[in-house]
Length: 96
Image (cartoon, rainbow, N blue to C red; front, top):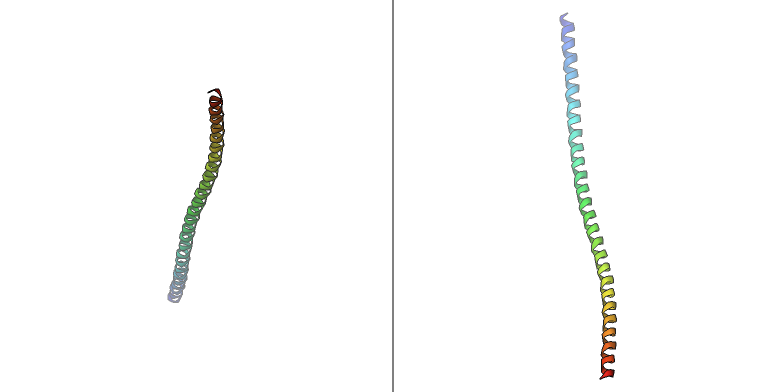
């Protein structure tokens, strides 16, 4: 009886050691996974920031292109008005 009790205690101690080793292993795996998750989060944040910069750059390019088109249109309109004014001046000079 006493021998059986000692054997049971030894078995329980062995199980406890195995469980402790398993817990230690799981805790280490958990730490590694948490570290990986934090790295991925940092990477996602960086990619989001880069994506935002790219979007801003593209928007700036579109604005520059748009302003160039607008500038060209305004120049054509101005040239047209200058031509009209010149015609008006020429007409006035002819009548004088």
